Image (cartoon, rainbow, N blue to C red; front, top):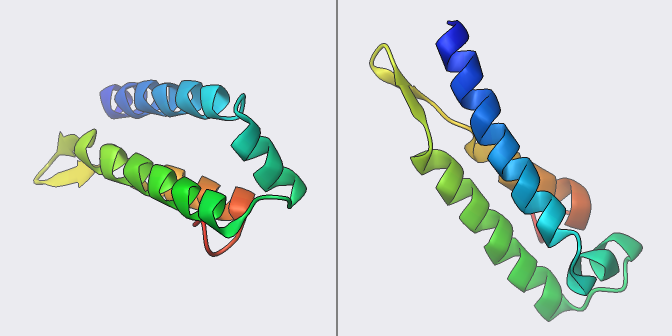
Length: 86
């Protein structure tokens, strides 16, 4: 159980680093202030969708199931950019 927690927290740390780097770009800052265009929102939707795909493939197998973190990227996109981005 602790191995699973350590693995998932490590992967969550990788996502956190990517999100911190992404938030340094102007497109994300415009998204947070509400000034992003439809094209920018669509490109961020693709980016956060890719985070969801990466989170699926970074899953940890445990007892015939996979514990993954795919919802983190999509949920964060929805929180930051609304339903179009999420």
